[in-house]
Image 1 (tube, one colour):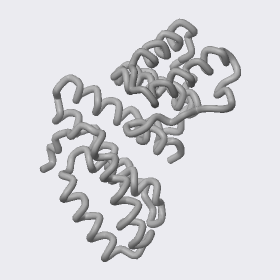
Image 2 (image 1 turned 120 degrees about the horizontal axis):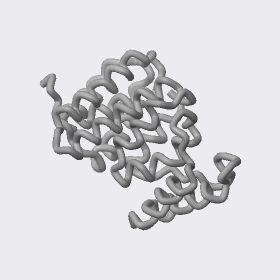
Image 3 (image 1 turned 90 degrees about the vertical axis):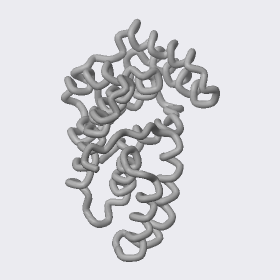
Length: 205
């Protein structure tokens, strides 16, 4: 599922789109948005993202029916870190330019955070469960990136100790992808991801 991992990484560190201009038109404004995103990533000063958001609005950077993966990668840090979850979710639901799996996954994640912001952790958990089911329906035996994404989603609603026990069990009993993959890569990524996320209620418990 191309680019999903970039959006999950946002929750820990912001992806830096340095170098080439992402989209031809409005290139100066987009370059400034990249710069503001970078400045925020090293300072945690939201003023930079406020400036980025103002550029996005003033220059009409976002045309909701034309948001593709590159545009989403450009604007996601600004909307997400400024907690404009529903605003971005509504934009993405209108676009026809995104891979459908990315669109479903990202809007579910945004809707989960939106409900959590409204202090409705139960409803937030429902959207995380949607993403878990969505990923489980796509995973094939050796699809490592989706397996990691799956456990990142699970970490929103399952106690970290229980999740680590599950991963340890898989490392002992599952040959695919490899035992080391579960024991080292999945476990380390989940522990790091868990430090930076809110915990939602799991209605299925």
